[in-house]
Length: 392
Image 1 (tube, one colour):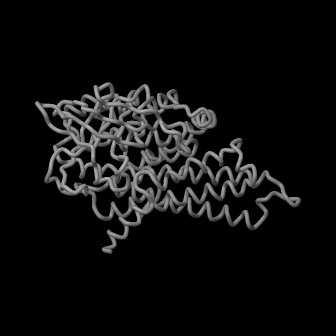
Image 2 (cartoon, one colour; image 1 turned 90 degrees about the horizontal axis):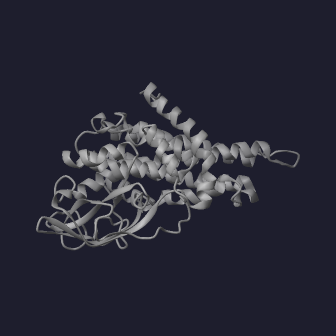
Image 3 (cartoon, helix red, strand yellow; image 1 turned 60 degrees about the vertical axis):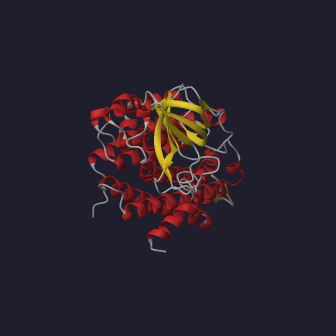
């Protein structure tokens, strides 16, 4: 068993590490303070080919593997989780469903701009009354005279309201007899592409968020929104299976984001502990601080190993996602997100009163990291999935 990165993977990691240090990190505090989306950073990530990393060259991708994408997300998130989630959502939730399930016409229409980072695409799954219970979709799409007429609402949607947002893939009930859904009528769920500017599609004002201030997040509403019948993603009734597959990759990528933040917490805490003096010596000489740093380092490395294994298994999977990959995705997402939360908590503690001040980046890390335990499936949902896969 070889845990070493390939030359290509190491090159992606080093490229993104340098970019994060030289471009993302210097802008992170200002973007966070001003709640501002980093258009210039997104443009540069596009120029570096990061949005096209795991996709086939046929549509403008780089032909790299999924682990390379996770390495990129980890390094970018080490500088700013808000920029990291922009990349993660654009690739795993935006472009990936079109690449994996779209018709050739859909791929040709949208992927070149998405993989180049010129445009962003969103993924609309969560609803006001269907968060963790994603199968309880209430948004409806009725087929009338060759058009889908969509009515409903989505919430907490990333990358849908920027100046370069091109559209959203939504899940909607399109009939009965599809199986899988839990909204009481054995609903057929389909995924449908809705372009920005479509009449009846409304991007509502953004949220006042605790963290991820440099990312774009809005609720959406659909009022008799009409799109062509051909806008169904892949095949009608395939939406439930499609979003389960999509969330699998998304969970591993969020785990990579969490590892990046955990590493940032460790980096900041190590540097501060060596500089901060108390009782006549650097606090890094105090055993209580050493134990905190040792635990942070150990848990971060364990989380990283889990993410790399899950990413490799996901990449190597064929056909339907196997139970092993489901298990690894749930475990890596659960462990990495909770590791990053513990790391942020300890980072603030090590910084003492300064950790409570926005002048130090650990305050931002602490605010940013909580949502990692919620998005792409809460920690509770991950434990449910793990238990189910254990046969419980």
